[in-house]
Length: 301
Image 1 (tube, helix red, strand yellow):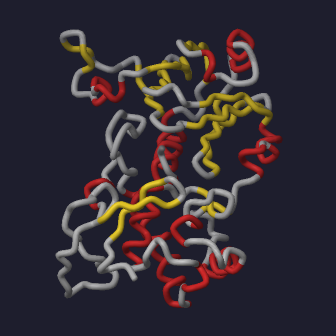
Image 2 (image 1 turned 30 degrees about the vertical axis):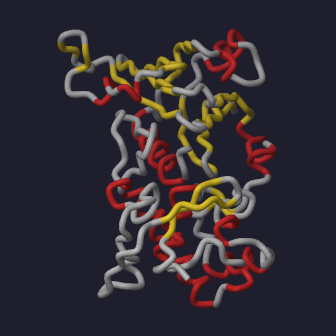
Image 3 (image 1 turned 120 degrees about the vertical axis):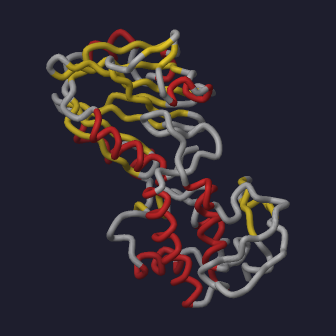
């Protein structure tokens, strides 16, 4: 599932590419993804609405429209959004020099046709497993949505500082740190990939109880959370599976992963803690809260 860096990358792309466009049509081969109203009514309700801007709350995408309406999208496990221009060049029946022809971008389930002046583009929702969600909501009621109302503070929010992190941990003393970081009701945005990377760089065993963490270890976890998420956004996310950006391109953070999906491989050593040391230990995969976490028992204590 796309995590904070991937969704943030998509939101930034959408603000550059679709802001100011008007929705002129909508097509879907899987109407069940459109929640709350029949497809015909959904199409009518979004018709001729201008896109005012795009924002993110946790792993959720909100496309604000004119008329006080907002498109609420969740990419779920395999979803990603593609923006295509009518000016794309076609050669021998395929898009020339385009990532759009890649297999992972071929599962188009929904398409919005957009227009601004004489320019026409489309926003397409590719979703192999059809888990994605589309909802039209009132803009002023977004924060009242059950799935949004329950979310904890966003991991990239300026208000999420070391003091706030300590406050969160104080209330979860009996919990395991590897589970706390994944709890969206506490801190929104961190998923499986970044949980493993954060704790590796911080040198902390993911199985540790919060009560066992020393002050300097809590600070390291916080600092690595901010650093890794910021770096992942800069590298346009992690494509270990289906995630692609709005141009159909994979992200770049998978090239610098230290532990995630590296079970059975040699440790690359936490640069934050052991710059001059070598570690020949093998990365292991364990399960916490029914989700995999990857770690090095030599570097993480």
